[in-house]
Amino acid sequence: MNIMKYFLTASLILLLFLAYGCGLTGTEESSSDAPSIADIEGQDVVEIPSDQEMAIPALSPEDQKKADSAPAGMTFIKGRCFTMGNDNAQADEKYEHSVCLDDFYMDKTEVTQARWEQVMGYNPSRFVGAEHPVEQINYYDILEFIEKSGGTCRLPTEAEFEFAARGGASTRYFWGNLMDGDYAWYEDNSAGTTHPVAQRKPNVYGLYDIFGNVWEWTNAWYAPLFRPLKVTNPVGPAQGEYKVIRGGGFDTSAGGLRITNRTWLHPKNRVFSKVTTFGNAVNEIFNFIGFRCVQSIPTELTAASPATKNSTSGS
Ligand SMILES: [Ca+2]
Ligand SMILES: [Ca+2]
Image 1: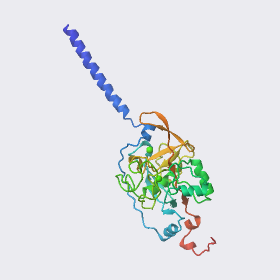
Image 2: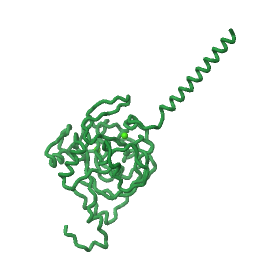
Image 3: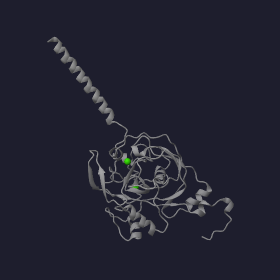
Image 4: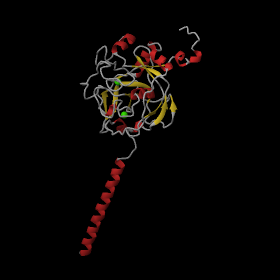
C-alpha cells in the first residue's frame, strides 16, 4: 500500500513537472519573431527611437536656385543619405539601412479635391470640401491624373516619402517622441473626418499633413522587408500585389503615425480585406487614401554649375 501511494505521488509530481515544461515551451513559441500579417498590421507596437541624428544643412547658392525655382505649391527637398526603416517597430520596417536620394520637389499639401476636379472633371471623395484632400481614388486613377497633369506630377518613391516626412528627425514623429495633435489630424482629434489641408503645423520642409488626414499612395510595390543594402534612389520591388501607402490618416491611432510605419493596399481595391487582431478577415471600406505629387529637379538646374553658367538658355 505504501509503495502504491509513493508511486502515485511520484507520478503526480512527474505529471506536474511535464505540464509546467510544456507551458514554458508554449510561451516561447507564442513570442516567436516570425512575422505574420496580424503582427505587421497591428498598430500597438513599442518603438525605441534609433540614434540617427540629422540636421538640415543650409543650402548652397546652387541649391538655393533650385529651391527658388520650385513649382507652385511645392517645396525643395535636398537629397542625401539617411537611415531608412526601423529595427524596433513592426517586422516590415526592418532593416534599418542607408539610402541616398537625389534632390526633388514635393507638394506641400495633399492633392485637394479642387485640384483633382480641375484635372479630372469629377470628385469621388466621401468627405466633400474643395480644400479637403481627395480620397476614394485608386492607384490607377492617380496614374490618369499624372498623365493629364502633363509631366508636373509623379508619385513619390517610398524612400522619398520617408525622407521628406522625417524632415531630419530621428525621433518617433518628426516633432518628437510623443504624439502632438498640433501636427496631425488623427483618431483623437479628427472627429472622424478629413480636414482642409495645411491646418496643422508643417515639418521643416514645409510639408503639411505628411502624417495624418489621409494616408498617401507611394509608387512602390509592397515587400514585407527592406533589403539591408546601401542603395541610391531605390524604387522598391519591380512588381508586386500591393502598393505601399504611408503616413497614417484621420482614423489612425497615435502609434500608427510613427515615421516608419508602412501599410499596403491593392492598387485597384476600394474594399480592403483587413486581418483583425483575432485573425478574422472582414471586408470594410478602407479607402481614405490620398496622395501628393513630387517632381524631379529639371536637368537644366541639375546640370547648372558656375563653369556652364555663361551658356545661354532658351527656356
Ligand atoms: Ca497625409
Ligand atoms: Ca504597419
